[in-house]
Length: 423
Image (tube, rainbow, N blue to C red; front, side, top):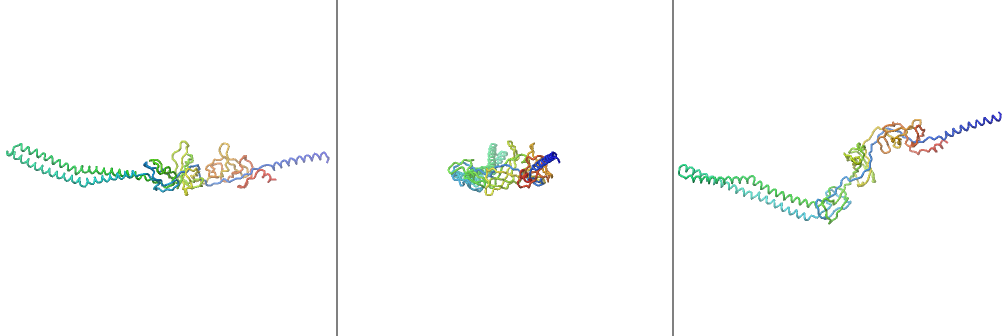
């Protein structure tokens, strides 16, 4: 072969070899994104409504005196545990005790007057009235006989008419006396005695009421706790003037606590009294349940107030603490669920996932989400059971891009590491 031709052939071969080497080098440098996937499954998910709340005692009482009097002694201090009905303070009451003794004497005096009237006086009055009726009856009958006798004598002409008229006047007078005494006796037997008795009984009742009132005033000097709990405030000291209606002692019952929270109208529609819940705070987590769902919406916040109550053994949960409330309102069964990490924000403000096909190419899908609970998300539409969704490495992936699935739970290899593996 001539030298020139040989040189031309060699040059062409070198060009061809260079082109092939360049393609192989480009193929070697092609990057396949590593991703981790999870399979969409049918399962069960709880609808949990979470919100911040403030703790309150299950019960509390400001113990206020009903009377104004100097404080004689206070028997409790802040932090003391008290029982319902326990004496916590006493007020000065010597003047009230004296008034009670005076009213007791008046009551006893009224009772004595009643006994005297109903026992002897009324009986004597009735006896006298009966005697007066008998005497008046006899005088009337005698006057009547005299009149009738003189009328007969006048008819016989043996007596003057004037004497008969005088006898008639005497008879009428005697009759009037008799009728008056009868009416008096009837009055004693009916209205008079009853009214007198009623008046004296009313006097007894009034005296008894005054006595009871003064006794009550004396009892108000002993201040007792209406509930069992812990003393939270004690603003007065012995010697100070206690004012009626001003707290002497404040008591809170923290054997149970109530977390009060506000939830949206949409979330509140799923909540009902009796739902299981939990209270999570600095002291840990406590099992609870919903006790109150307000029937009225707060117009300024358009929310509903919900109360969640929990037992507080050891009084670890402190009223006034800010906590987190989790309410389990319902359990959804046989729904499609995926890890929350599979969700990505869509350009239109919705959400999307990236699904890996059997050929390891990805497809972007818009999804409609439902209930979220922790790291699990319900998918209403857009994904079916069995779909493999990207949970790690999905950011920046283009639609229909090739990916390499790596073991879930391990660190995703970088593109440089993948290239080194090929070399």
